[in-house]
Amino acid sequence: MASTIRVRAINSGDTTEVQALIQHPMDSGFVKDAKGEIIPPHFIQQLTFEHGGKTVFLANWGAAVSKDPYVKFAFKGGAKGDELKISWIDNKGASDSTTAKIA
Amino acid sequence: MTFSLASILALALLAPALADDKPDPVADQKAFQRFFIEKFPKVKYEDFVNGPYSMDEGLHRQWEEKEQFPPYEFAVETGKEMFATPFKNGKTYADCFANKGIGIRQNYPTFDEKEGKVITLELALNRCREANGEAPYNYLKDEMASLTAYMAFTSRGQKMDIRIPNDPRALQAYENGKRYFYTRRGQLNFSCATCHVQSPGEHIRAEILAPALGIMNAMPIYRSEWSGMGTTSRRFLTCNSQTRAVPLEPQSDEYRDLEYYLSYVSNGLPISGPGARP
Amino acid sequence: MTNMTRNIVLAAVLLMPGAVPALAASEADFKAAYAAAEAAEKQADQLRNKWTTTEAQLAAAKKAASTGDFDAAIAAAREAEALANASIYQATSEKTRWKDLEIR
Image (cartoon, rainbow over the protein chains, first blue to last red):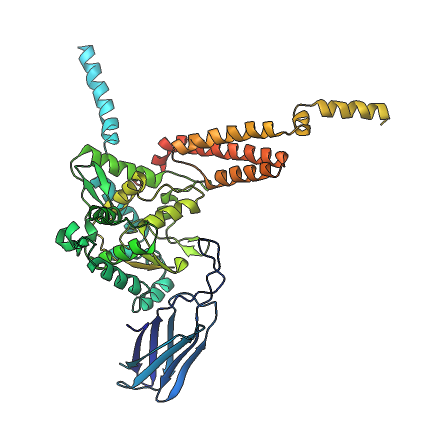
């Protein structure tokens, strides 16, 4: 199955800028469907970006993050050709991960 | 002598009034585009299709960044898959459209001279489905949004190219659309023009208003407010209810004619769809 | 004021137009008010110019009537009728006034 994670990492000098778009319903558990029943919560709880064995970005998410979240951040270090590993796990125990090369 | 002079004078006085009543889309389009170009001299012509982003520098920068990873990506992919999937009878959408349905979005809406009515892209897609034994899609939901998003994407950069044939019914449809655009409605007494001609670049609550010029070029749009892709039909209906007007049925004559008018007066501007909006 | 004067004033107030119907709000009165509002809304519908707030007031009128609160129901129905009439006026006057906004 295709990855839910799209990522682009660009290095310039000693900084690497990362953007990621993750496909996930991010249901908060507060919204009702057309029948008036609560759509159960289904959201990413932890999102991790790793480089060189170290975690460079860690997000602990909850119900407030919207559908198909977009993340952008920069970290010191990283070089062209290095690998960046991205993984997430949601409240239902589902997970996905991918690796991208820093450009 | 006096009689014919009087009648000549009468005709001379009547003539301008009659000319005033005959629709002149070419003149309308010129005046429409000139109005916005003069009102916003710093905006590049092609940028008008980017709605609120063309009106605010800060928003524009944020939007440029997001375009590297646009939120509508998923809908375009879904739309592409749907477009390629055959109907139960083996035919595909490609069989219903010119050029197999690729790069043709800028020609819609079109005026169907056999039927004597405006055909929008959404309507054409559902007719294609029904002609091939499939149930039509709800104009307000994801499937139609994904399909039209994909088709718009294949037309990116192409210039809006709406034709009004030399047919009084087409001229009437155009005129109906124009009248709808400027007519005030709802308890808030807003017309489309109230926001998009009188107040582009200004705030309405937390939103920055888009100019009417090029407003159809970005459709359909992924709205953060909707957390998803929404059709032109959806936008027309929600704009209505936001002015406290009871919306009409999707793809009602009024909405088809409105889309016809708004698209025509933006001829020449590039298709930027599908768009991302706040 | 003496008791007598007060009674006369009270009687006069009670006999003023408007005072009497308020004392006798009935289902029949509601039905009449609602019918009038509905008729106006039907006209607005024919003009393709209904307002969401009119619909909301009609619904509120029905709801109040269903609980037996005919005073509130009639008030809502009257409000709905006024809104419907305003929407009719809007549609009618906009037939010519739209040109004022047109870019020329």
